[in-house]
Length: 111
Image (cartoon, rainbow, N blue to C red):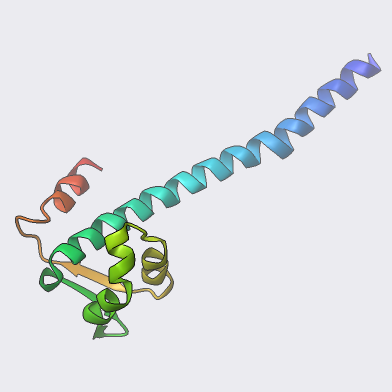
């Protein structure tokens, strides 16, 4: 009977310390990926038509400076630094919807 209790305790500990944190980790990283994908779509729209977008930081429009600094990475499809900059610096992004970037609105309606 003692062996059964200790085996049960071991199973409970394994579940508590391995499986539950793993589930939390997987769910938190999947949410980050979805957010990053949305930022990537927005960056693609901005790169395609910079005049239809605005990136605002501390009340100043930094769209031109942002595109000048990150243009190469956007063209190469490497958005990691770009997305991190936008998240860490608490920037605002405004996009005027036109025929070239209507997909942004369509995706919002489906989410």
